[in-house]
Image (cartoon, rainbow, N blue to C red; front, side, top):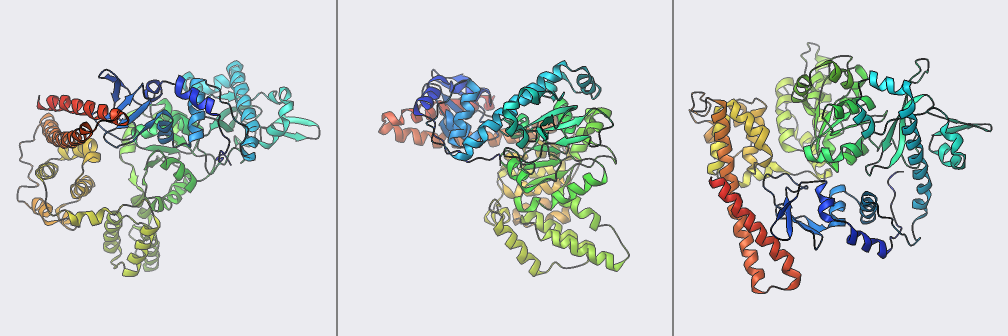
Length: 586
């Protein structure tokens, strides 16, 4: 449908023009802030991974980039390929469009690609006409003003209005308009599908309009909302409203908020949650998950608080295990949708709702975990809960909820079930068995010991560690313990975890959970935690410096022209590390 395999060839002349005219600094600066570093290079925080110290370097002369942290590298086209998950040709088109460079093709492209071009052109032109009509229509503007949608959001989403007269001026594109669902034909009369409706353009991930949704202003119209039907450009099971507006914010924040409606999504953007998208009159599908997995593995479902919204979230939980995503569920008060809630409540109330979001397994199992005296109902609930558990391949998650189900239903999950779980794990190619890693670590280092003790002794310290530093903790055993402490597990429950003895020894220390500790003031807690992680970062920088120096020494022994860029990168990075180390000493 809208995922076309591009086989046409762009002429070498056009490719050369892109490399000649496009500034790699300007291109990459739209993803991360770059600052001059030395006489030739620029540096900044890497746009491909989270970091606090810049390890990402760009050379404007050679038009190349390199990250010493995650090792990603390449030229300006390869940057867009990796960042936007595009093919070579798609990346060239993306850059050409961004910098206004026309592309020449040699005419040798697929019939499918040739086929969609007039449809893309028609859809784009119609959307622009609707946008212009909205700017002149008082009723449409008053309605959006009443809904408290700002002019900036209207501009960002290119909101339009259909007065029903656009098709008259586009009769030469009748075929495309009918097939795209923009117009319908009765006899010799051509009429617009969305007449009298506010228009919400639906773009693909590259920002190209491929469909639209419409909201009727006349209360007498039966169908309040109407979306484009599936067509050559658009498939509602794959596309998401707001994906182009949200994609960079999703990667930056490393999570996405998924809503049901246009206004829900726009309201979230209005309130600063620009990492939000909306499904389009359908359930949350596997294709939606695959599309969003390009950007993050952390999903928050924020559907309406009515029966159908809860049902849709319940069904979405069944899809999470096979993709091993971190899916959380926000439950709104009965009858409210995100748009209403955000209009009627302070923003802090919404933030609190996000913080109280439930892990998808907890949300799914909750109805089956209610106490019931009817033995048949209890047996049925046990079966449904166990069937769901079988879908989970992650061993930490599986073992945690296996214990809960066994205790609640007073049953023993059979080996046959565990065998099926292992089969599910094999199906999931993205699964990482962190349970096996724990057996390989026999010792606990000093940093992990200090962090664990602080987390055990002080709730504020635990909160700071989990919220600010959890992602950068490399000790898998420590990370698991911090996670379970944050979930409110007690000593007995922690000791049931599959972790090495040295960690259990610390947990069972007489003073481990003592509250009579030196960490009484919040500021002193913050400082103590920060000092530990500064020490960890200092050690990491020292190790990185040693490694880079060895590489630099090897290159220096036989420096050739093709190694010159790498030599400069290495030298500059060592210089940066020295500066960072001086700061951390201070």
